Image (cartoon, rainbow over all chains, first blue to last red; front, side, top):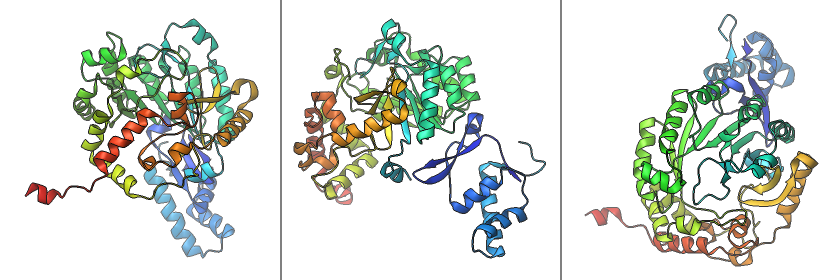
Length: 93
Length: 349
């Protein structure tokens, strides 16, 4: 999967938030606040990534078991997908 | 998150007044200049200057941007400045009276939509609308603009400024918004003109008793005021600015003057000349220098009164004096909400 174009990360009082640009406002009218691991995964999704690669991002950075990292990645991806801000290979943009 | 931005003095929230000119002539307006005012038009920041200022503001931390006027859509170059802003990672709100929204404007806005468009509706009939706005043949244009934007999929909120001449149509306006499927809110605190031009505000303002009638009729507002009255008052030496003005929010006027808030045109730092960072520094310096209003800071009603340096400046041209209009409103609130809530069951039985 990969993040869709048209979203940027901004800082509000030290918190990272995803903001839509241009016509993306019609898809996501609001802000998504990212925690540290969410930011790490979102940044990694600037290129096409497999679930395993995203798990690796978290285990490289944090003292966390692979199982816990996988659970965290899946939860994040579910949320991103529900918000319509990532796409899976073969999906329309 | 916003509290941290305020503590960090991140200029997270900006309001840009693109023009003071307007195609309506509302008697209570604090800013309005005629649409054909050449002096105003020739001194307004150009579209390129607004884009440049916005880029600087984004670099300094601005995330939330409100574009207001006057009427923003009477600027022929509106889209020249607006469309680049929509690519900068901003949450943008537009304030408009909607009378200049044609099918072409609605279509173009929908291609780069703001997060929200707040549309001012000044009545639920042509007669009230015309009385408030001093303009004929505008009511239908406003209704058309609202419909066009809503149909184009743009997120619309309808709001009204309540005056002596349209408050009786509040319920009708609420009903219209419900039919359009858009949120509605109304405000009735009218502020004085910021320049020294003649203002008709005394004619348009409603009496304290009438203004508080509305608060009393709204359950959420009533609960809020009762809670404020029950809470311990803020410390007497509290910051004169109880909001984020000059700490995380700012306003830039049509000629590029940066100030602490929309109701307080000070310090008026010339952002196009000195750059955003220096203008923001001067705003912070100004806000830090404002003396506490000792009359208000020791007043028992201050938890239910919005008095602040901006209000004092608007009404008294000083920064730290009580505002009689607000004193009257606060006294009336205390009289209505200060007593214990009626026992509904007993009253109903």
